[in-house]
Image (cartoon, rainbow, N blue to C red; front, top):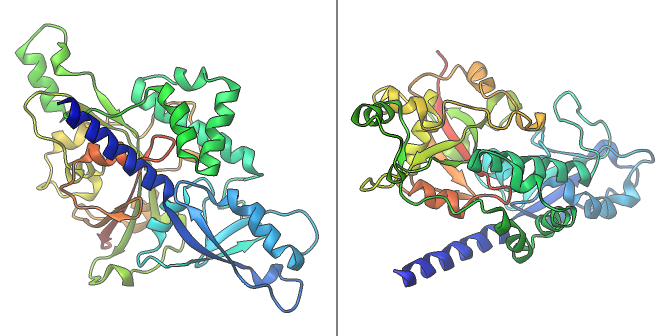
Amino acid sequence: MAAAHEEAAAWSEEAARRVWGGAVPLQVHLHDADVTALPPPPPFLTLGPRIGYLPLLIPVIKAHFSNALPPGVDTVWFEYKGLPLKWYVPIGVLFDLLCTDPERPWNLIVHFRGYPSEILSPCEGEDIVKWSYMNSLKEATFIITGNSKSVMNMSQADQVALWESVRKGNFGGYKNISTRLKLGPFEEDGLVRTASTERQHQQSSDEPESPGFGKPCRVPVRLYVRGVQEDLEDIEDAMPVRDWESVSYINRPFEIRKVEGRSYITLGHALQTLLPEFFSSDTQNAEEVDSAAGNSDTTDPSRSSLEAEPASASLREAEITKKAKVKLVRVQGIELDMDIPFLWVANNLKNPEFYLHICVYVSTRKQ
């Protein structure tokens, strides 16, 4: 048994190293309006870490284009096919969400003027990216443990070292500090906490919960849901995302309880529970849909306003029917089978702030 646990731990560490080593090849073009020299500068080629953020690439990108930039104060932002890119969403998530047919390299346009403040929240440098990351970590900690004390009580030196490990992609340094937070791994066996199972438990015994019933295990999940045409035969032919109103950005923790003798929860079951609005009533019992995510799109009330975008935005925009069908699920660039154990995905493919980011493509039709 000990050997099996050691082997599982070794596989988990290898998966984490692969996640940390993942990168998106980028080809960054300077926007025509920012070019002040002839001939125009060539595009800049680089690797964008999947777990990293676009603003962290600005120093090297600016150095490359420095001889062609106009004078004045920079307000740097990126776009893809006319869509301004949200700077606080990890690079890998942006790529998985916006590229139905993954481009290699991914062609982005960088702007040094005309920041679209009506679309993007302000980003004034690395400090605000660090703040956003630490806030997400505190939020994830709140979901997992019920409070954020382990992060709030970190020394300033540890906070700096943790951020530097994320910024530089140093998995060893990150692991040394993050293990002290005691945020995992998530339990491997569990049962979705539903209204029906809660009633059954209460009816079967008036005694307090026994240790065997299990302490709730809550997995921090961020879902990014975009619609594609219902009659689409090839996902690669999907229309590009033109605005962020057509994407649902949802914080919805997934809660399970450890119950002996129960089979593992699949990714498909987890998505049915997390996204009941995208599944017909005949695929998921209404009571089960009601509660495994804790009946909540909210977590720590002090969370960042950057992370609190309305979950219903794309539902209003696309008028998604009850029978929307999931066409594709991507996590860390992998198109996952719906039968894969959900907690394996959560334990091995999460980002450094302990969130599992899931990109979901659904076929939709207007009512």
